[in-house]
Length: 169
Image (cartoon, rainbow, N blue to C red; front, side, top):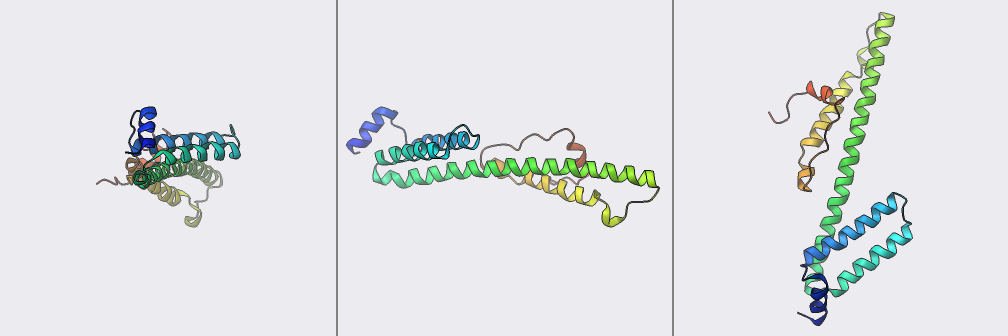
């Protein structure tokens, strides 16, 4: 163990490369979220995050740098995958809400006019496809791969999924 590693171990309490990577990744992610929320500028984020990563990497033994880089990459990948999954889930839920409102308007227009909705204009098959996509997204196991669970379903969406066949059967 080099003298730099010994000094770092005194400061950090002997963290492993994985723990050091988790610390650096959390710093990068926290600063990135603050930047995305408009609480900090991108320049401040870049200066702080880059400095933090360089500080941690410079204190690692050369053999541990590869392990650190791999751990940091995994943490950042999990962060972006979860952000993507959450955004896709929310967008699909809102899409279902708008489609259901459209179906309600179609029914009201059909009742008022006395004419049936033409099959090519009916939104019910599209609702079933989008709902099936939401079920596939929730049961794909991607959240579990990142150690999380899918967000709870809103009460107004659950009836739309009730008509679908059970994906686990």
